Amino acid sequence: MNRRDPEYVFDALGDPTRRRVVVQLGSLGSATPTQLAQYLPISRQAISKHLDMLAEAGLVSVNKLGRQTFYRLTPERFTDAVGWIAQVGAEWDTRLAALRKQFRKAR
Amino acid sequence: MPPPVICNRTVASVAANPLPCNRRVAYARAVSDVERETLLPASPDEVWESLSDPERLSEWFGADVDGKIEPGEVLTFTEPDGTQRRAIVEFAQPGQRLVFRYLPFERTPDGRSRRGESSRVAIQIEPFDGQTIIRITETRVGSAGTPRPQIGFHARART
Image (tube, rainbow over all chains, first blue to last red; front, side, top):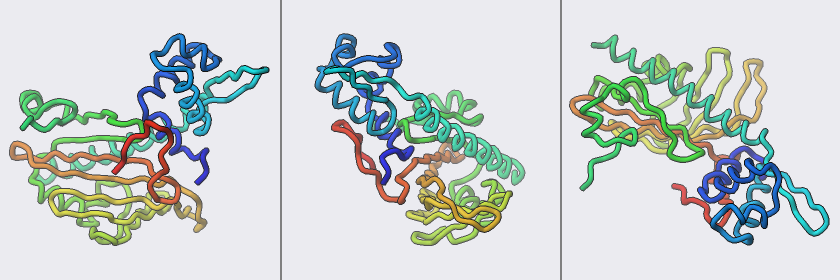
């Protein structure tokens, strides 16, 4: 299993706390876990773990400057996940419209 | 017992104002799921026939579907452009529930195989006020078609 597979995005974003980290990181642009901890009600250590998981899924990039580690969102990974939802959702919209039509015809 | 929730609303509120469900209601329960549901003017058995009869299924599914709707059977979906996908029926309870899982590869119109998306489709059928609610959930699964390893210490339980 390639950890860069799109399904990892869904697992990584399935956690509400991790989504808050994503939103806050998007707001800050680039941030260390310590900086993020100033805005979130969780510890720096917990934020670091969440960021590691997001990095593993390819949702954030990591840049080490001296002793500090900066994280930044990688938007293309989000685009892929949203693209799957949009495509599959549109397919079901079309199918269910055709199914409704099938029953309208039968009546 | 609390009333079942439909479209994030109760059955009572759907009965009071069924229009949104009739017109299609979409909502996301989880990031990885696509969910749709609609109310059909038919009995659950009639809806099941539209799922289990390959000819009727092909008519609304947007692909020619070949195979039996029975657990363990393989379904072949041929799209209008000739692309073929296959799926395994994991669960089939007539008039109530159908689950199938797409295999993670597809055949292109020129006969080549390529990696495709694997996902699990669960179709739930429930009677409602003389009609039937059909609820679709499609969930992306691992590329090998096996449950994904969980990421993280807050990973959500999956069934």
